[in-house]
Image 1 (cartoon, rainbow, N blue to C red):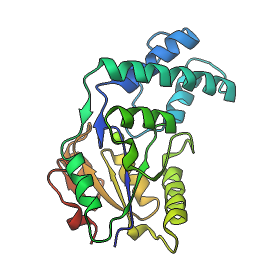
Image 2: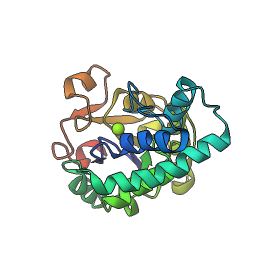
Image 3: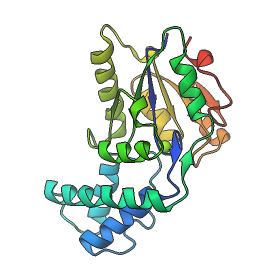
Image 4: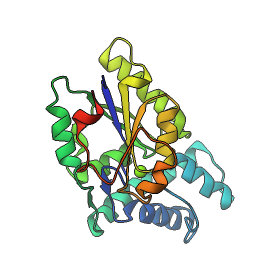
Length: 225
Ligand SMILES: [Mg+2]
């Protein structure tokens, strides 16, 4: 039985219309005077802290706690700004899927497993009315390595739920091969959805437990038995 469901955010729950990338770019331009700092950077499935660290290295900015703080203080401002400007949206089937999860005879705990820093996750999800849904999770500022985030999310889930929480009682939902790897790191079940940048065929080659075009195409009762 699945007791904890962990959702990725970008490309799984919602699309920001590029607000995250724009916020990164504007922050590097405004705070560090580096234009187009994120050119050539691959965002999908990565943690915010590892992305910033890579940009710092590329542009020879010292990766000090002060510089990270300076980056993220400006980033959340720009993120909020761009979310209001660009056309994002909730991915197909998300609201229905969550309602169906909550209506299961024994509803699982809902959490987040995301590379977004916590405040970035909150800003994105609040913008689309989804923040209050999630009671637990792990975020990009908990650890730079996404696979370690899965362990943190599992530990926090166990603290909330009590008792044992082995991987087979956890379902991870994500849109990239890195989400599948992250679920594998804790032996969790994983549903890969084709609502981000990867097709179902591409995701299928990474052997998720299930793959679906979007969350309208699959019901929680199929996954949580
Ligand atoms: Mg994603």
